[in-house]
Image (cartoon, rainbow, N blue to C red; front, side, top):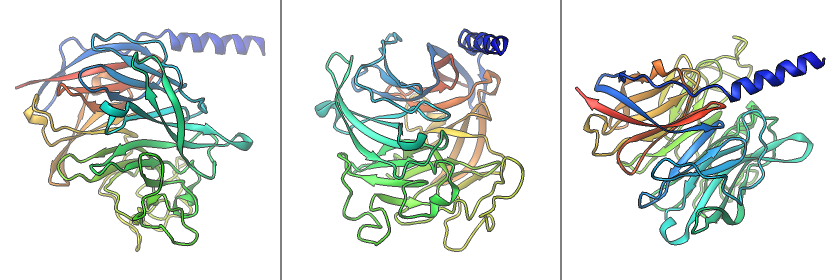
Length: 382
């Protein structure tokens, strides 16, 4: 028993001391040219999300064990920022997404989503906000504005992503806590996209306001485990994506009151290769088909539309991280339709957790590892 524990400890230490994923000196080929990666920060423990501060003041990065850090413009990494809430750091749980208030320049509000412990060892996703101090060392006055209820997760499928739309509404993309049927239950907040005012109040025009037995926060339902969301900069519409089971990762453009199928409709099967018991087919009457679907799951996480001027060949593209696929997925769009897919950075052999466009027009990615990295992606056109 003692020998087993010692070996386990040594194995964990080995993982923590592993060097970060090596960057290929000659760059990475792509259809548009050669990609160059510049490592900015290493030694991040399972980084999950990032948000750029205005006026080139750096960016905030979340680490799943429960730390929020500042990366300054020179690539320096701060000590953990104070005032972050306690998180349920088990399984897929922990500190997840970070987003800035649309009025951050005036109110300095930072929004966090995270796994929050409940009774009986169960947990659910929560969202809170606080003011970032002027010295950027702490969050002041943290307040929970949303809780996923009931709390049903034992460590899986929390989601979650935070997106503000053009009207200032906050969308929260949630997982179904690995409790499949709850995604169809309108009295529960599992497997939903919810829409809130910035202070957590429910908008009066949400689709289920006033409907008996339904949560007024719900915008759309029938989702599995949503780990990507972004606002389309050309249409203003919310796009989300979610993990399928074995197969069936999908992109959706969630509309008010619509049912996106899980677990009644899916392109995947159980991890055991057995069918999903509740599934009735790939398409089911009364549910919305995926906007785009992968037959083989790349295990998608993070999402960013590229509308920068620095790399014209990418303008209008959608970028998504792949965990199991260990790549950055580039999708070409014609209007809302996906017309071409390319896998980037596969030789890097890294789990891509998040991707964002920076204010400088570069793409930034986070690698999900015990020794994770923040990398800047540049394109040298052909």
